[in-house]
Image 1 (cartoon, rainbow, N blue to C red):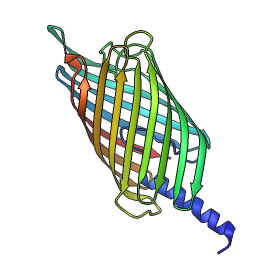
Image 2: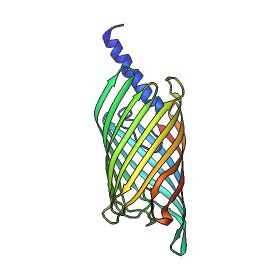
Image 3: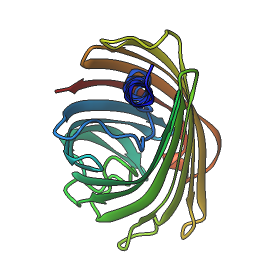
Image 4: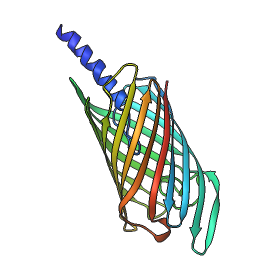
Length: 259
């Protein structure tokens, strides 16, 4: 086989492994799809607190205008049933709309593996109700800025993300770190037909309010052709949060459609 053919084959296999393994469930991924691809996605989170529960169900649209760029908008529907001091709050509303931007600035493809690094920003608009539920509905502006790195091979995937969330209107300034491990259970195939297990960690340090959350999520994902379905349960490993926002668990249920 000619050297040029090996390069083409390596690129093809690397692309298929990246697609087959799929993006993390509760995290993000530096690897991009092909330019021009579009993605409709939803990832509903049922978050249970000591003081009630909140359900965030965002409708997400992502578009890749170029090989290294991704733009997205997330429009969430929120249901809440929460205790607030001595009273209760219950209802449904629009959550905080999010505008996403990613730029992949490093890529190293080799036979059987690929390593990518991307910059990310998430601009969170104050369109939601002031529920004090970070990531779902705070009713205040937030700006998140981070770096994502990922290594994927035919046997496993590792993704990591480090960023800072700036909340100028309250004390939710946060340093956020995520670490995820993906394990494909089937051999790479084209068209895509894959089952993946995910083991994902999240650490959030709210340094102004001196609050902290460390969680672990166990997830499973099934990808077939252009459609992916996924589910994960996140449990707290350690936390120091306000009493009515102390987390018990979060359940994630999602679907993705690429076209």
